[in-house]
Image (cartoon, rainbow, N blue to C red; front, side):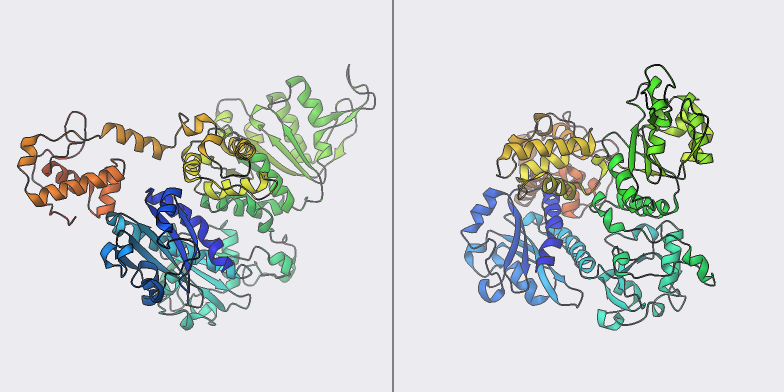
Length: 625
């Protein structure tokens, strides 16, 4: 039960935000029909609690008659129960959309349900519930088989590692332990029992060792394989368990026919579990971490590129912790913060009496201090050109000569550089040496800004746990929405400072909007999605209909008009979202609105790209209210 709740919380919160309706709840029910977790607004939770809709209540068919959660358990299938379809009259104001969650054995682990007072969300929410259910099932598989090898595959490369991708848990002896729904479907199996226990070679024309080796060589980008009978092509990424180093498990990563002595010389696999805290479900971050973890084992220089505050130094420290130099020091140098007349002595050091004002005993430079460890050169793009040639020589010859000294000092370190600027553009502009750039750029990793990461919510909860002395405070739905829709120009650094202040102000209570800075809750920068939504709300407000227009509508059309207006209001006049909810195209919805005399633009004209009212179009039938 603990795994079910833990694997469901993030998806439930995300689903609640997607539906964006204060008059609904997202609930998780166990296999016995008991509500074990709920996400909703406080007013809605209080309103429905009187009818037994709360954590701890039983909603099996035996206890509550026909209802979304209980009937879903009984039917073992997705189901929607709308208002008067409920058995008990006190539930007839509710509409439920529910999907069963199956464990790796094919048994029902629970039910994910959305319950609201609006039947208009039924079709839309059922689709989203089904997608969220798949995410939860994938998370359950990951949690149960975290010690197994994972194979992600699909017939299309862009779907590998996504909600639609197949996932197989495979033991070290190449036997299949578990699979998600997509994997069974793509491989042609009806049940897990038909696949479990088979060797992976019975599904694909490659061994587990070969899949892992090719995935590593391809930097964990999808590689091509074929089904065992060579009739179907798949794209695949194979990953060893994050804790394989702890268990002593070793999977050969050499190509077939390679000598064992060559394999023995390869570096040990990176301990990905030690840097897992850098991402919480964002695929861009995950791919950068996997790539970095491989190259850092071979002492390949790394450039980190990202906006200020994206966590470049934290990323570098994490890579240091899994590198062959982990036992040595991590020495950071901010090239932008040091005056030009000091950066040379800071980096290379100096002997006693090398210049006026020098310390009597001399000083070891940062490069020598980093010997046996990692040297992190932050904002490398701001290093003066005069020093770039000296740094290039240090990198190429692995030795440094302190200022005023005649002898060199041998050094060995992992080099990680970082910049918020495009170094290649600096090269083209003559501000950065081309030879140094290509010497630093063994691999370049791009850290996405916080505004573009899809794991913001999980990151927020992680920071709350880290910054709290006791149990981390909860977030009110309003505060959570404000944090998720803010653009975060200062990235993770700004987010951490905001949460530190909120923790201090909330006094152990749930964090409210009042505990957040005004620029976040009132007039702060917005993400593109929110900005577009608000612009749409301002630009597409309804014109009052003329009495003559309304008099031309019959009773059915008036009823339909009211339904469309209600949907538009619920979706903040976002026509695209309403069209999706109704499963019709935007053009069809616009034509329907013209026919019902609902005008959106301030001047009453048609939106750009749409045909005028008298243009021919397909018939748009009314939909039921």
